[in-house]
Length: 356
Image 1 (cartoon, rainbow, N blue to C red):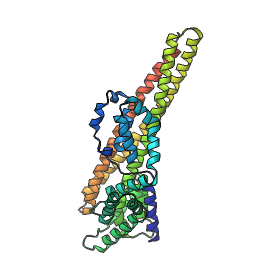
Image 2: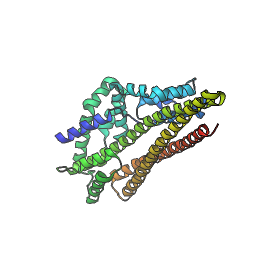
Image 3: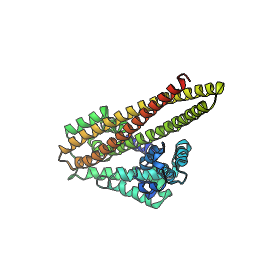
Image 4: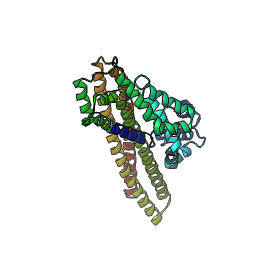
């Protein structure tokens, strides 16, 4: 019991440490509203800011991105968001009240009414009742409701899931090979020495999918913030290189030579940074593909079982597969973007190093 309480406490700490619910459009805004800002889709920052608005795990970061997208300042607003706005919004989101609200949203999403009715209801109540209720839910309410759900599950002999050896083998496999860090940890806890069948039932009913959702959101938070940094640094290098190149073309003598040297260095640095970004996104695309393949195997495993728990797992697994497939498409798009920037930088460097 003490170990389970400790694990619950760890789960709460991880879930409220800046990772919130994933909502398709913050503040009820529709993507179509962006169209009123002239030319915004041609901005080099548009894709990363729009993606933050759609899927960043923290509500305040999403809302801040939507404001940037809808700003009359257009490209300048997107640049401000990439340079400082995302980080400022993240700092606000990391404050306790925002973290507690994000936590309640996440729990309501990942602990279903079907298999964790008390947790699900308590999370919805906390969202509705405001900051004090949300703080109480994060501190003690979640653990208390979860304990009640676990006890009710074990008392329901008629509907209690029978843990077959094939189920154990599957969880053992997850504990060793699952591509998600938090799914591996949840599976390792369920299969720990001294564990019981009740721990496996908890894993199948709630902990597996809660951990999987955490893996998705942590991936999105990490790649969005790293992606914004790539855009901020490299786009500034491109502007510097173009400014120096224009100066080289209009100046004469020594001034032109110096400007050509500055532009050549800026283009060379741009190519180096873009190559780094391209390799990072190649790795991210591969990681997403691995996750999507893994969730496909989960769906196939679920389809071979008649247990209603596995039917629920199949539905969530399909959503997870779709999420990782979509994120993989985005990662490949980012990779291609930086391939194009590498080419642009290489051509710029060649122009500035060729004989005048």
